[in-house]
Length: 189
Image 1 (tube, rainbow, N blue to C red):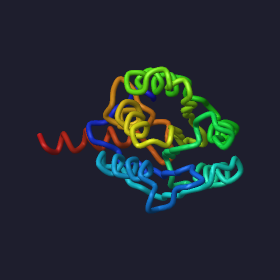
Image 2 (image 1 turned 120 degrees about the vertical axis):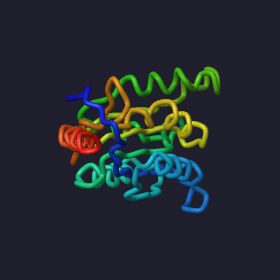
Image 3 (image 1 turned 90 degrees about the horizontal axis):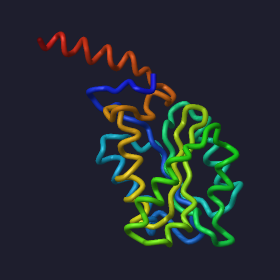
Image 4 (image 1 turned 120 degrees about the horizontal axis):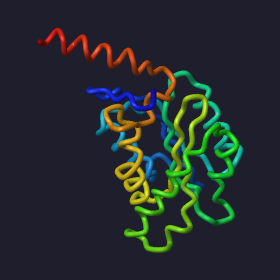
């Protein structure tokens, strides 16, 4: 099933969480980068939240979205560094059923050309749980752009081959989507 791709984009419902002790809705530029990016690709923002860098506050919001039948993808910006307050990886890892090991590896690999070996301090992680994709990334605007443009955008695009994560998400019947496309193609002939 993972190799099914579609001709048309399947619009996904995405939530954005900013983890920060200092940002608010006005100053949350990295959250805005992600929102603008997902909308530009044709996806839908279902909710946006900002929480302080606290393991239990992060888990509470993420758990709500994972359990929600509507939210298919969660993008988390911030809290991935090495300061004593950076706790996003510790907060989300216990909630993930499957870790996407390659995400952090690719993020750091791509980032090295931008920030050099400082990329070692990125603890960006991703995973799948309850058919919900969760991607975390550092809180800078550039890190969000890198994660979105170089990795996430393609992996949540149902048209991306040879595979993408869309068939694994809740409320997706990829075979029905492909069948509808074939019917539409046949009707056009």
